[in-house]
Length: 165
Image (cartoon, rainbow, N blue to C red; front, side, top):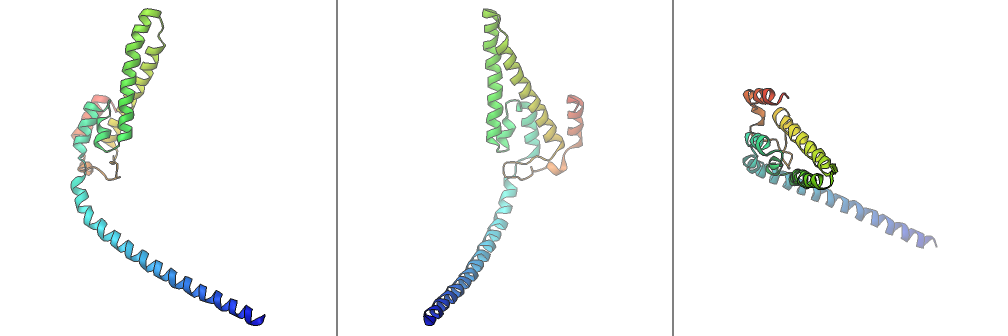
């Protein structure tokens, strides 16, 4: 019986030794993969700088087409862009069909729903103008926009005067 227990302990020790060797191999493998990742990232950072989106273009899209969400598409935020397009279309549809409903039945509820959606879209647009002019805005990859660190004071003054923000 004693010999049997000793053989079990020896087997257990061999298993522990194999686990330690395997852990050392895994840690070396992880270190090698990490070094490869760092090298790849350094190589692609210069490419990413060239791909950065421009701050002035984002401001232009926000001011002119921001109610529809064009600037969100430019920044790569497709979901928010689609939401803004949907809000704009829904507001128009509710107001258009609500107006005919008012003339036929005297019901103003559809116009009210369209107005609420339209006011929400307008408020979101004004907030986006404020955010892109006064705050740091990032694209979908959490990269700051090109030229954002040198924001033009004249541009900021213009929007402050025009929109009272």
